[in-house]
Image 1 (cartoon, rainbow, N blue to C red):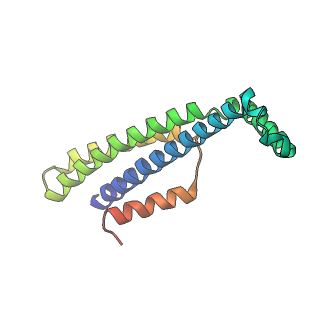
Image 2: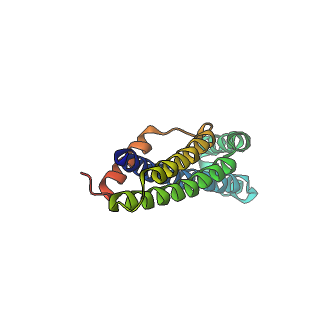
Amino acid sequence: MRKTIWDSMLDADMNNRYWSHLSRRYYTREKWAKIFLAAMASGAVASWGFWSEYELLWKILSAMSALLAIALPILNWPKMIESMVFLTEKWSLIKADYELLWLNVKKGITNENKTIKELKRLKDKENTLSQKEANLPDEQKLLRKCREEVISSRGLL
């Protein structure tokens, strides 16, 4: 049971880091997409003398901004970011609960029945979160990076 609690605590830490990184990544993408659209939509940009020398570039950027304006509502990044921030918060709470449980088990403060009950409660919370994760990006490279961060931060190298 000690190994299960330890591994679950590390998984919770990894998930907390993963959703935190991912929410920041998508927030930054959305911000820059909106800045690009705002700049391209500005009539003043079109009047810059610079664009007369690079007419093809202006046409490409205009086409990109039109496609981006169409794609952003479909991508619905604000809703995704909201879900990712929610998951970050919940995984942070679960991680804290696992850390407390681990300390109690490590010190021998809790009895086995109480530990099993708490472990089940935390696993139920995890299962609820996995339903929220279903429609969100699954970025394996970032997941590996977060796993490495956990290993490094816990001194497990």
